[in-house]
Length: 266
Picture 1 (cartoon, rainbow, N blue to C red):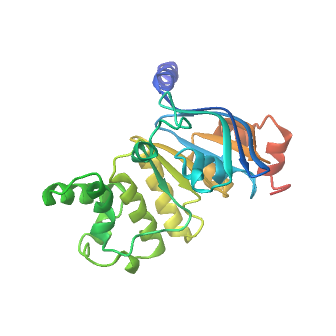
Picture 2: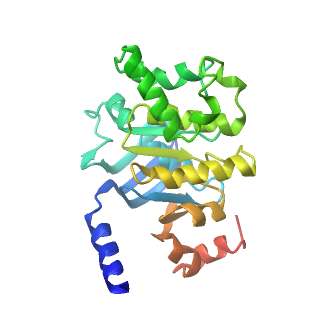
């Protein structure tokens, strides 16, 4: 019985495809060398956590994965980031195409100053969907996918600013789901939330990974341990260690990793 389970697990793992392959990525803010020789493979349908102290390059790295980092004029990069075997740093890769595949949820909830319905329908409308029945289906499906439908179904026409912080964050996740992404990037998505809302978002992340690949930056090591399959530890712009989460937290290979997760610095 155990042998069969282990074999099945191994087969499933082998069948998974690489979503991202980062090779020798370097990034500078002007003269500041913020990311140094990053090599990182991200596998589909898993939660990959990125941990490390403030200023270590976590958010910078995640913002390279949808090229949002390019909004800062002084940034320059070298190396390669393959998304589904295409180098996204190649200028021929249209950023609009990339961002329909790679959605993002930010640290603080950022709903639009519109109704709950219009927040979720915004992306599909941008992509040319105008049929009301189709939009209704997308809105309901996305809100259900973000585990918030039952809380908002009777007030879809009310302003999203009337929702609690936790509900706003789940609405932002629903807005992300509405464009049917392949990958969801999350940059400390629960840092501004209370413990109950944090738990709901964590449970949601666990549910979503069966259909999406999720990369989450978190300052909360307990959160990384609870929800991720793999964890990368960043320090001073470098990947110190990257492995299965249980190995990172129970048997780290690098003393710097051990020192960080045991609270000796950070």
